[in-house]
Amino acid sequence: MGRRPRDWHPLAAADPVPGDPDAILDEVAHLKHVATLLRREAGDLRVIAQGDGLVGRYAEALRDGARDLEGHLGETAGRYERVHGHLTCWAHELAGLQADAARILRAAREDAGADPGSGSGADDPLAAHRASLAKVEALRDERAGHYGHLLGHQIDDKIKDSRWQRLKNAVHDWQGVISLAVDVMSWTATVIAVAALLTTPAGWVAGLALWLSFGVLAGHLLLAAAGDGSWADIAMDAFGLLTMHVGNAALTELRAVRDATKRAAQAAADEAAAANSARATQAVRDRASAVVNRRGATRAERAKARHDRNIARASNRRAGRDAADAEASTPMPEATRWEAVRMGGEKESMNVHKDIQRMRAAYPRNAAVALASEGADARKRVFEATWMAATTVDGFDKGAGSSDIYPSKWQYGPYGRLKDRYTREIGSAW
Image (cartoon, rainbow, N blue to C red; front, side):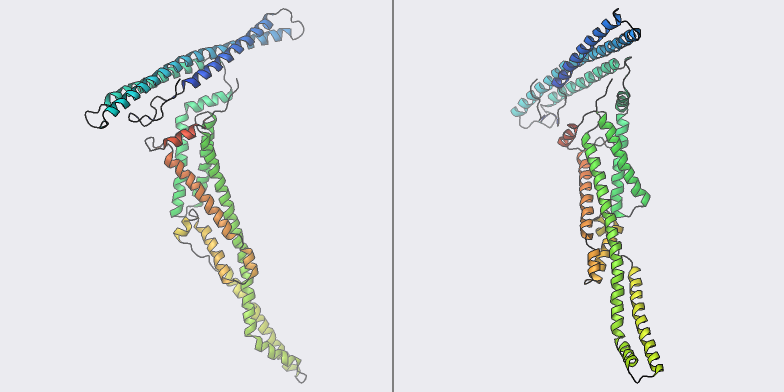
């Protein structure tokens, strides 16, 4: 059939009679071909089942097996034939309804062109066209339900479906409930993420968000595999979990960098304080050394000089230890709420980064501190980038996509149609 209109202005925002009769007829042709092959194979098996030329130990078992298999193939061929008959009728009716809708649209545009002020008010000349289009749309829904019932009845026969087919049928039956549950989990995880920007949630709450994300992925995977969901949702779920993993890895590495920097800072504090104390006691140690090395000094004088020198050295070591202990007990700086928002509400992680910056500033000339703190800024940027990417994707999907919780929510049509292009079910075997 001809190409369908894309713009349904001024009667509707989108195609009121969607569907592809040509694609349905293509599937009908495939079903006819399969049915023909099945009938042919069933005939060959009938010859085997009725043949008298089979002799030997397994002849009777082979005949019985061929007879049973012939029956199954015949039943399957019958299902294909009944189904393709209903599909053929539906394709022709759908094409007729779509032609009627296109004719109504053309007439409406002609009337709108003749009366540019049309489209509102009590004397709207398009009202009759809208009413006609609504009747076509209602008839399309009624006929779709009719043929859907017929197809379901034909499929519900004595042929035993595979486990996967039964699972797909169950998913089809519960598609609304599964979609709603997935949407609830997805929105709950998003609410938790937003709440984390304003307050630091408890550990179990953050863990719940992670498990909800896995639940959303599992639900979308089940729906997509059965042909009731888009594989684009799977890609976005996987992207969200991947960014979460990369971001968490970056935060873990950032904390490891802080621990290494802390150890280097303690050593630097010890070294600096000991050096300062040594400069302060330099005169005492010099005088003591002079007494110890003086030839005329008595034994008592030398003993006292050595004692003074040891006390000065012990004071230097104690000053270093005290400085190291003070650095070890120094609390991490507190990040502001805005600073935490930049890291997705991870206030503790932002505190870690600020502590690394503090230690760099406290020991700017210490090579060990500089070396240990390398990579802190890069890991912070990795987390910020992954958080921003995941938030942007999730926000756009929830803003532009449909919602089972809020069916009347605004949605961006082209985005939904793009996702529908990636709706493919996993095939099953009889």
